[in-house]
Length: 254
Image (cartoon, rainbow, N blue to C red; front, side):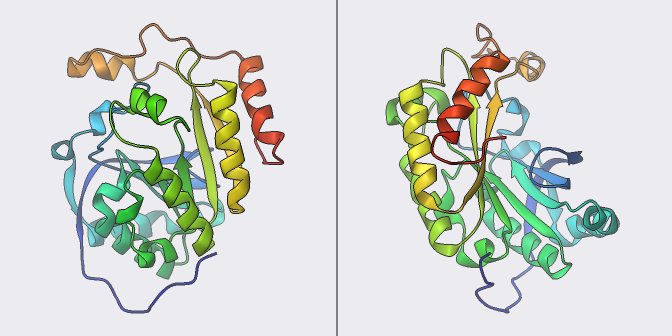
């Protein structure tokens, strides 16, 4: 685990929080209080939270207010071996808010997880990462052209660089890969991601996330065409085959 870079308190910060939820079995170990922060620079075809894309859809929230909610759940989160997760949207779009929130969560003895694409990894200060117990790093593709096709914009290189930085700092990573038959899941592409993950040395596990269409109703409500309307969820056998690519590199893919 990374060591806190300094003990200087950070200034109060304000974020735009789209919503929050208490979840188990996702967003990190144990039961999590997850803050979904508003705003994201990517437009992933399979995104199931298009309502978080715009910063204006968030509620202006001070860290003190967020910590009031954290404190109310803290005994339960500790007992459930969980913690606090910053998700989105893209939480590093509001890196200062996350940095302040995580500092105070760690002072309260809570595990912290950062759920990010890594595309804005350069925005994360060393202080933020020192107060991050775990990064949930979403690697969408190895191939730059496919990455742009999946995200609508963006480059994969910042994500890969962020992963190397996390490795150098000793921040644990759970790598995430969304499997959409017909879009992602090419074995050669998956194999290159697996080689990259195995070479980092700080990837504790790989979560292969099967595509689902539960976000389709949100697109309809927002009047946005649903890019994956013709896509299907993978079968259990197909998901296992992708997991095997990672397992072949001695990575844990439960």
